[in-house]
Image 1 (cartoon, one colour):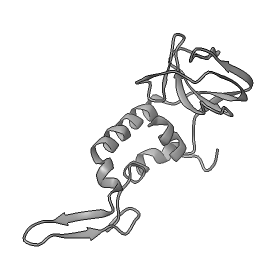
Image 2 (image 1 turned 60 degrees about the vertical axis):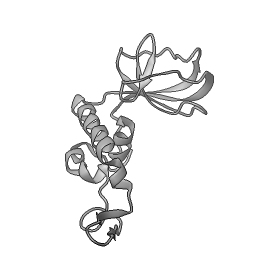
Image 3 (image 1 turned 135 degrees about the horizontal axis):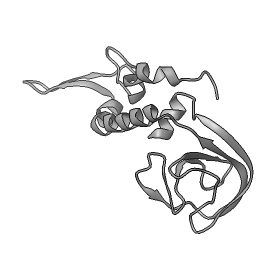
Image 4 (image 1 turned 180 degrees about the vertical axis):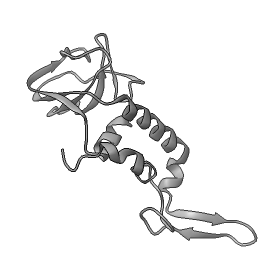
Length: 151
């Protein structure tokens, strides 16, 4: 979810970009990063995305599940990230919100009424009255302080 939040605000909090040829062997890549630091891979055929670095394993962007990277050698960029703890905490709130409201947020209906006769109101799209609310709409005001206009 953290990667989606960073994409939404156009801000990955890039501290340093390293261009070069990288090798992933046995699902692990050795990088000059701190234990627990997040990083972004781009230019890979199999592993593009945000991960969390640990010397003994790589975990997902939320640092909750160990992931085995696909073995490959690629020419690309690895960005060391410095995501603020407040953004990480907010990302966890977004994840909880999506787990609770995700199905309703993607539904084409805003309300249903089964009293007497079945009826429904079709969403018109977007946020606000008559439209569905996405996590980006629900957290827009809290995320705006970190938003960048472009990468």
